Length: 460
Image (cartoon, rainbow, N blue to C red):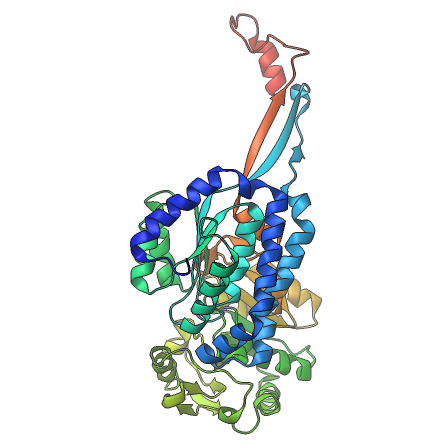
């Protein structure tokens, strides 16, 4: 079985529930073998993955390895630590419970649903799947139909290497998603936009299904004067324009100290030429916009402010040049929603308080970037802002660190994953308290006459 037909979704879920009840997925050695199986499958299909992402997003091969196939390192990290993660952990008990022992047992949830996006269509399906396998669940995965070539490769990989009673793929568009969301799952993991995230959460509420929502938002990037400018512009250019800006944690807009703004703009222009040449449309290292619908939305943003770098477009190729815009108003459409493309607005500030106030006037972002060597400034920004994650003196790269939980806050998401956080997301921590038979104090039993002073003392 490769792709589950819509009419069979309910049957597949029941099939997986029956498989889960056998207890096979709870065996830690089984989980490790399946993770190794997944890694081997990815390595086997490397070239097909590269070709699919080239077809879907015109993604350069190096970017595919850096941002998609690199997910195998999270598999290695998980295999290395899984034995310790699955062991029951002792919990402390207070002195009045001296005859008791307390432990916390992580246990799998059951059958989970993972819905992936189109911008990193391989990584952002496989990464949560690693956590679902590690935690001992069965899983149904729904790749994005917009990245259709990658969806097809994922379906082939899973069908060849896994029993659909354990892991199954459902391909298709909105109808497929609606069919899945009408069913009961033990957890739903969704990566995508805030608007669809609300739909997912509403559907999950019908069954009180817990959700992890990895969304997005307008991730700000503050640039202070106390920086290495050459390193700063390179790191911003890479983080913003990799995958043609279609990254949920790409710097959405720059907040630049007025004193350094002119030099920063010059540095960005120089860096863009270094990366993509004088005409990025001819560069084999620059991706394309996923569809004409998204292309048209992004082109409308070019009417805002003043284009100072780039701005060229080609509708036939869904190409938008790496673009920097100045003189942007906070009321402009480009500042009202997540850009999700290769357009970078610049807003200047004279005092860090202005930048912090602007950030705090908007919904909490998925990421916040700060370029500064000033320790006091770093501390202030960390204390006075809230975001899913923070990266200081770099961009995007925090996503790749397996030991750091990744996720949003507020409008940018619910819950987190990566490494141990993925294992936790797809696990239930079951509390277990055990008493012994060697002693049985009678102070808690009826009759209660005369026991209140002792109980007050014990509970005081």
